[in-house]
Image 1 (tube, rainbow, N blue to C red):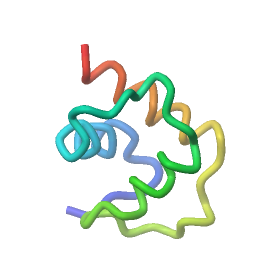
Image 2 (spheres, rainbow, N blue to C red; image 1 turned 30 degrees about the vertical axis):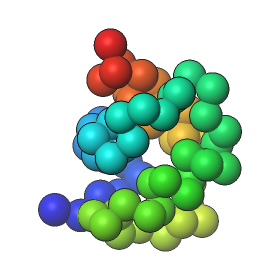
Image 3 (cartoon, rainbow, N blue to C red; image 1 turned 90 degrees about the vertical axis):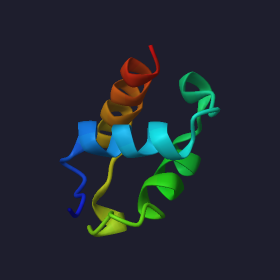
Image 4 (cartoon, rainbow, N blue to C red; image 1 turned 180 degrees about the vertical axis):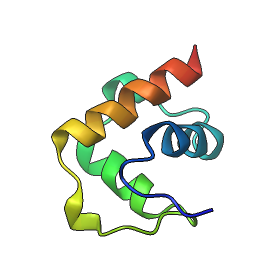
Length: 66
């Protein structure tokens, strides 16, 4: 399975598994972007992200932590 920026929930699930102790509510978008692009399954252009996409992934990750 490959992950694209549009796969917000799947990315959030992968991040929750890989970084279970991360304080997601206060994560910087620069760190979030790096975490996503470093995922083994991630296969998209790193330059195609934006604040809206990163925020959606962050919110989905927060939901997974609850």
